[in-house]
Every structure is written in structure tokens, then in C-alpha cells.
Image 1 (cartoon, rainbow, N blue to C red):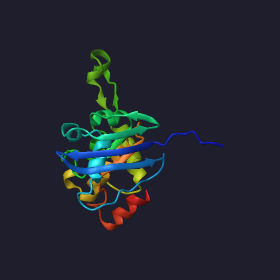
Image 2: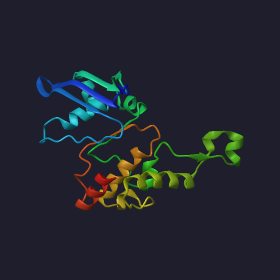
Image 3: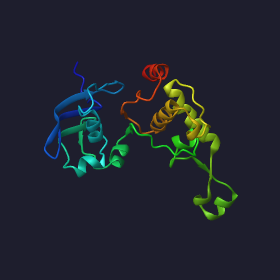
Image 4: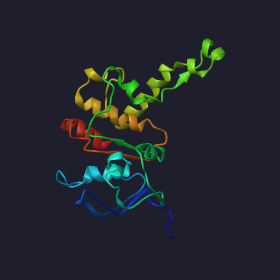
Length: 203
């Protein structure tokens, strides 16, 4: 019996150069749903560049684009911006943190996606005056953290957190997105302790 189900991701004959300096040549791989793929290579091998191509980072477009094809669920795609990738269900955790230091882990995890609830004022004057549903925010952030199998304080302010917990907060933010199909992690264990790295790899 033939399996006609398409792989989640295919990258075919990917090529990229920066002003004549070839950094990627004929990169091919396939990733199925539920699979984990690790890319290994020395510094400068092009791992981050490949991930930036997949996530539609501006630097790729601004330096002449790339060659080859990307297929999601068997359909050819071309992401011109990270927003295109996000809409297709792709998330990415970068090497550099993009957290708001004065916000808690929960507030960062659900930033710009906060659940709201109506109140007397918003019933009269419209949804713009809805209030944040903190109970639901706590539930959603806790569920995302639980997926990683680690214990971090969701109410702790980012500026007070150990660096490893900041990395877990970044990952939890992506895991909290309902439409997430594929998560790209750029050197996720670089800032983690050995114990934290083991917990992440086992989750």
C-alpha cells in the first residue's frame, strides 16, 4: 500500500551566496511531521543562513534571495517575510533574545496574543476597552511551559531570570501558538546548563 502523505517540509537544491561568496550549495533534506532534525557543522557552515531562508528573514531577500525550492505539505512556498512563515505555521527561536525585560514570562509568551474579556465599559464603548484575562493567560503560558518539561516561574520578570530560563521563555512563546507546525531552534542549547539542555532535548 502506497503512502501518499506529503512530508511536512522539503528543502530542495537550496543555494545561497552573499555577494559572490557561496555559503550554501545544493542543500536537500526532508522532514516529516513529528520528526526532529539536527543540523551540525562548524561556525560559518551556513546553518543559520539555511534557517533564515526557511523563515523568510529580510537579510535573505535583501542580499539577492536564494536558489532552490521549499515545500510545505507538498506545496511550493516562498516566504518573503517572517510574517509569511508565521502564517504558514513556522516558528523560530533566534540566538539573540527578543524578550521585554520588564515583562513577566507569561506576558512575553502571549505578547500581542493576549486573551481578553469584556467588562461593563467595553460592553458600551466597544472591544478596545476589554481587559486582559489574566487567568486564561496563566493557563496558556503554563500549558506551553509544561510542553517543555521544565520548571520556570511564569510570573518572574525577564530581567530577574537566569539566562537559561529566558531561552525556555522564548521557546514557550512559539509553543503557545495554535497554528504552529514547525519550530526552528537556532543553537538552543548554547546558553543552557547541561541539565537544562538534557531537559530540552528530552521534551
